[in-house]
Structures are given as structure tokens and as C-alpha cells.
Length: 357
Ligand SMILES: Nc1nc2c(ncn2[C@@H]2O[C@H](COP(=O)(O)OP(=O)(O)OP(=O)(O)O)[C@@H](O)[C@H]2O)c(=O)[nH]1
Ligand SMILES: [Mg+2]
Image 1 (cartoon, rainbow, N blue to C red):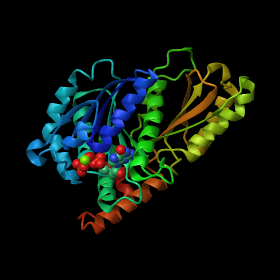
Image 2 (image 1 turned 135 degrees about the vertical axis):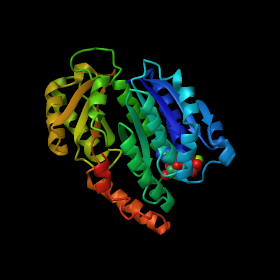
Image 3 (image 1 turned 90 degrees about the vertical axis):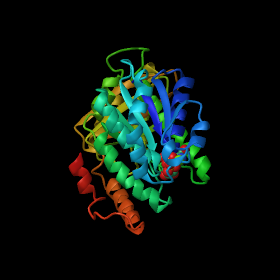
Image 4 (image 1 turned 30 degrees about the vertical axis):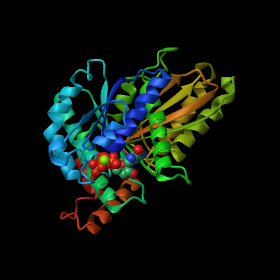
């Protein structure tokens, strides 16, 4: 799937750059443009991709310090400038736009949902938000910001792909090493997903294409992604269990939003050497995903890659009804209260989220 990426805020810019780099190094050419937008000048100066500094009149290039309402206001004031900057990039060839942001800060948290809304006003292409949830040890302001941003982004975007900062962090990682590892994991998984819709080798009925990704996400709401791989035999007949077990691992142990398996729809991509892919294995894995997610709408396809491994990439859509999202909203609600925050007691309930979707 050919996309244009727009990172908003510090995390958004770093992840966008990391995704663009992965796509470039792998030669996939799914990323057709990458832009970073921020209110903080030093954060933009660290990036190699194109950048736009906004809100200079308000915060003088210093960021909004976690004030996501200010982040949203600044984005609104500058949306036209950003859309102009993007005009040439969202050419007819881009099939979707992905806005990337950490949901816990200020600029990305407030700005990303606002930008998604503006993009949707003028483009017919799907607009997705890739949003990072703060880990449970992060501060209360981050939790409260993320609760509000999550709801708005889920409403404004065609899908909100969530990555929990606790999902892919190594146990002994420092914060900085942790970010690097998480950003690499995001780039690889999302990068592979985008590339899978671009596969040209061995084009056949079973090869996944962009429309499967778009249709899987069509229901809106919150989505997640997971990935697992294993060594495969040269004989496809011996890979039935390999395919079912990588699929299990992807769904049960590696999702970007852990413990949220119930879904409205799903996509199962099996990546690897077409000669090694067992059709029987793929069929079994797909049925297993149907049972596990309770979804009647599980799409599937292959991503032909020259490799001696087989991998499963799982995308779930419509996971907002899971207990995991409720738990996060509770955490955000508690945090908002202790920030002396929300005046609306219902602001963070997930019922509310359901109503919006
Ligand atoms: N995965 C990941 N998360 C990050 C990274 N940098 C920051 N975060 C997370 O993003 C949230 C903070 O958002 P930032 O992007 O730093 O904030 P911002 O959008 O620049 O907003 P302001 O600094 O308030 O103007 C926190 O939850 C951080 O844990 C990163 O490189 N990777
Ligand atoms: Mg910042």
C-alpha cells in the first residue's frame, strides 16, 4: 500500500523517519513521502526527513510542554500550511495517509487527531492514525492526554492503529534504548504490512493487496498489529504446524495492543517463500484466527519474500470493545482526576468511546 506519512510531535517524527528508513533500506517503495511536523525546533533538527515547524508565534520553537489543547489549537491554525506542503506528495499514487504521533505528549496528542480531521475534509483516501500509548509507568499527564487523544483520533481517523509503549519494550531497557527498540519494531511490522500490499513477485490469487488492508480497517475504531516468524522447511508439507504456530505467536504474544484479541475483522498475512507456504497451514491458521477473535471477517493473503523463514503478520480491527481498552481508559481517567483535570465525569468511559464509533 503506497502511503504518505506525517509525523506530529517528537515521537511522531522519530517513528516516521524510522519507518521511511526501513522502507527505503528494504527497497519496498511503499512510503511515497514522509514529513515531520512539530512545535519544537530542536526535535525537527535531529531528523533527516522534510520538516515543518508550526506555532512559532505561540511557543517560539520550544514545544507545548504536554499541553494537548494548545497542540490542537496550533495544528488547527496551521493546517492549511501543512496541507499545502503535502499537496504535491499526496499525489494520485498514494493510497492512504498515515498520521503518526505519541498520544501522551502535547503536540502530537492534540495535533494528530486535528490533522486527521483536516485531511479527511479534503482527501478521499483513507486517513489512518498510528498512535503510541504511554507505558503504565509514564506520568499522569501523559496518561490523561492519551485518553483524550485516543478517543478523538478513533473518531476522526478511518482507523487508529495503537501501539502500547509497554508492548515491545525489552525488560532491561533504558528509556532511550526502549524507544529505539520499539520504534524499530513499529517500523518493521507496519513497514511489512505496507509492503505486503505492494508485492509483485509471484503475483497470484493468494497474494495480499492494498484493498485487503483497506477493507480490514474499513470498520473504523481501534486496530492493532502483531508479528512472529520461525524457521521453515523446504517442503511445504512440513510447514503446516509452522504456519499455525507463528500465527498463534503473533496473535497471542506479540500484538501492539496486548490482551485485546476480540475483533470485528482481521487480516492474516503469511510472508515467506511461496514454495514453502502450505495452503493447508494457511487455511487452518485462518480458521484459528476466526475462532480466537470471534470475527467472521478474517481476510488472508501471502506476501512472497525470499527467505528461509515463514512469518505471520496479523492485523486486528475493531478491538475497542476489549477489556484492555477499558483498562487503559480507567487509567487515563484516574490520571485526569489527579491532575485536577476533567470536569466531565463521563469523559473517559469506554461506553462513550463505543458511542462515537
Ligand atoms: N515509542 C516511542 N514513544 C515515544 C518516543 N518519544 C516519546 N515517546 C512517547 O511519546 C509521549 C510523549 O510524546 P512526545 O512525542 O514526546 O510529545 P510531543 O508531541 O512532542 O509534545 P510536546 O513535547 O508536549 O510539545 C510519551 O508517552 C513518550 O513515552 C519514541 O521515540 N518512541
Ligand atoms: Mg516535544
